[in-house]
Image 1 (cartoon, one colour):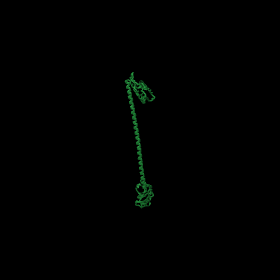
Image 2 (spheres, helix red, strand yellow):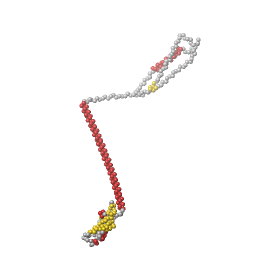
Image 3 (cartoon, helix red, strand yellow):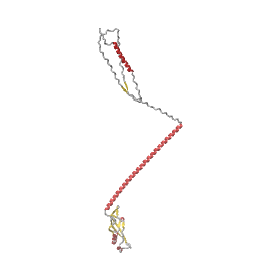
Image 4 (tube, one colour):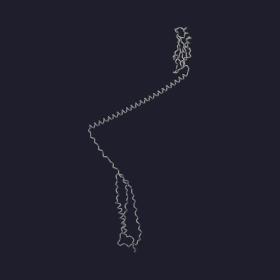
Length: 306
């Protein structure tokens, strides 16, 4: 018969220890499950901080304990070598992840204004309604007529303004055209005058005599033609002697180079005519307004005194 190990725990003590541990775990799980999450009061105007929610893992399932039937007459205890007890390994505590749950701001309630009370128009009889409709129609026609008249007035004013502007423009154009025509005429006249003056200057510089007729001759100082006394004794009283003279008149009208173109058949009369004509003076002969040296043929008539 083997010897009994007095240091080994009894089976009852072991079972009682296990039962106590299991009961403590069960009580802990029930206590955790009964804990309520506090409700957060949301104030309408204040911003509440985010709610932190702690996730709790459920407790491990209870350990089933096998029942041990203890016999009244226990079998003889064999000597069993006790094995070293394994240290209980504590289960790792689950990590609780706190999630921040967004808090929605309370939306302000929309204020819906109450419907405005509708005014019920007093009912009108048929005659009053017809009269009102006619008055409205007449007022609308009068307003339309007023608008048409105003539009027509505006159109007339615009047309008058356009016509006035056209007249002003036409007058300005006519004035401008007249100024251009006057300037052109003045330029032409100045050019003609300049050309005439140049021609006169050229003619004045030229002393070549120009042939003039007796009708072009005009006396500035007329000489005194008297019948010579020497010829009167041989002439018949009342007879007429004509002497045609050809002479040169300078630019100042002075007579020179007198010669007989046709004789009077009386030498004394011819010589008297040549002498007397030089005592007079012609107005200068001009050509294009410029004095010229001219040759002129002039007839001198004598009548024998009785």
